[in-house]
Image (cartoon, rainbow, N blue to C red):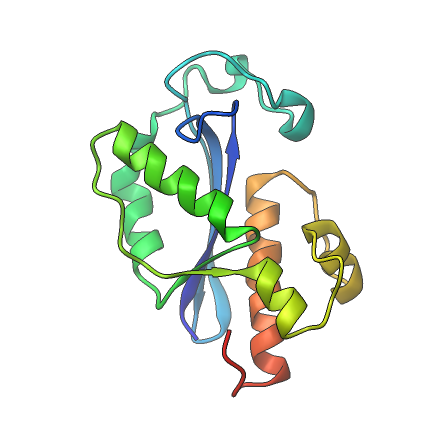
Length: 167
């Protein structure tokens, strides 16, 4: 099983306001790469600092998404799919941020760990904190790398539970 788990944090309601990303590559069913990046969004307005703790001061000297793209694109496109907890959100952030910077969004399948937790693991509610609690996964919620790592572990747990199950 080869895939990448991804988690974005955004500065505000604009989907292209990514201010952090966590990326975890899984190769042959094992966690192989863990990377986290702060991202300087296109504007200094932060609405969600109370959720993730990131401020404009933290990212004002960070690279933009366009600057990071050469490093993160190979990690995102190398696997069979991307996994995210609440995949519609992370997919929209990836696509909208790419479009904002004139980057063609990657055409990679997304799998949603919320749906996997519900359908395969039978866990409800399927919020990341609850799923991690049920599975004994350590989580520093809303820290992009911790969230991406937790997502990867959820997908791996589901795959090991029943290798024939369709994620």
